[in-house]
Length: 387
Image (cartoon, rainbow, N blue to C red; front, side, top):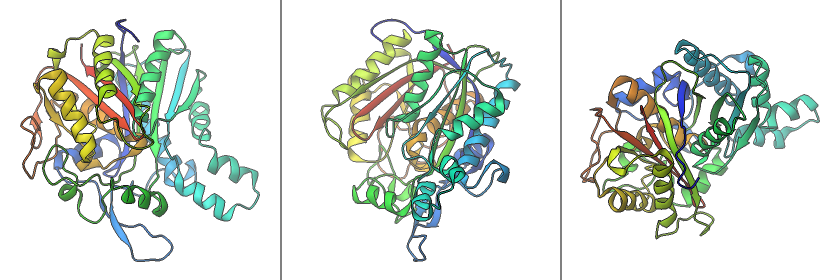
């Protein structure tokens, strides 16, 4: 992206299905409650008694959309976002593109497919091909712009938004529907994250996931379907993505380069592409997994680039780590914060970073830096605001 100042793009509509329930209002009310979306769930679905704290999507959605929560939550969040955008004055252009972010996708469907596949062509197409969901959305809405999927581990959501921004700036699309959905925490995948020392399921989330606080042990797992309508053809957007950037560490399959040089580079490039000075950044909407390396990386950014002069909040203690939707659910929180004038920060419980926000707090003027860091060194940064 170099030093070229981008034109940015607006968040015209928002749809959400989260551990708090179905709809963006459920997400906002849940965040303000200060209570985690996670609940005790059975994680051994072969009949065992093992259970753990997970922020899983509750049952719901339209049965006619298909079997399973994956397709139902995807289409529900898309419909809510499109309706929301129309209510905000969005008039779709001729070329509406669709981008879906995925990390594991519908792990339950894959597992069931390989256990019980009977040779049905319909079962194969509907249950396994992750692109089927995009085709269903485009048919339902008569969209004919470009369509694709992106995957960059836990940075996927922000990479999907960056891709949409490039499509708009290149004239490839007039508007872009960006949606992320993961229903991934089967017992097999969950045990992998636990064995890595990243996920913690044996205690209530606020007791273990305390980013920027002492005593943090890692993240609680979560699920979400989040959709944004991205457009510059809207009367009253939530806010704008002013600039964004991505780098890669090229260092380790799961760990981060301990110098955090590429993380800082992504932030510097995002600031440059947005055409803003670091002094204009008021908030850091953190990746905030609660792991030691993530906290060190984000504190390094705050100290080295911003001289510690910005307020910090992290939403994973409340919503869980939603993998492909990690960035998007946290940006959804920022969008709703802009609308309601309040930062929905979780409560703090132990010794904390001096700039960590403790509980819901009135929002002040300034821009927001969103950081997202994916396993394997996928670093993304975005500048959000109403300029």
